[in-house]
Image (cartoon, rainbow, N blue to C red; front, side, top):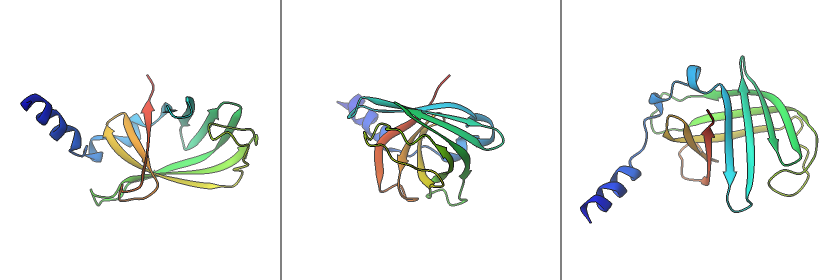
Length: 135
């Protein structure tokens, strides 16, 4: 019982986003797996600030940046400006054109290589989907 209680207490504690060295660890391949739709999204983040996205038939690319607030309570924000989109269907099932879209996602870090995706900077509206660094 004590071990279970300690495990729950530790899992509730927030991970300090400053332990994530964005300039060193964010580059590379990341994925999001949606168990509900049994679908994987793959992101490739390249220097100086380019991204590629694939999921099912969907392919997008563009520019990205991560904004980090000095306020420890606010989430890092991943911004992506979509430059090209093949207009095919992705995990959502419907074909949507995101060309010229500005996508903003809050990153609620749970470890140095895993962040829950949120739609707000306070981390109150999170999706239950996790961006996970691939080796």
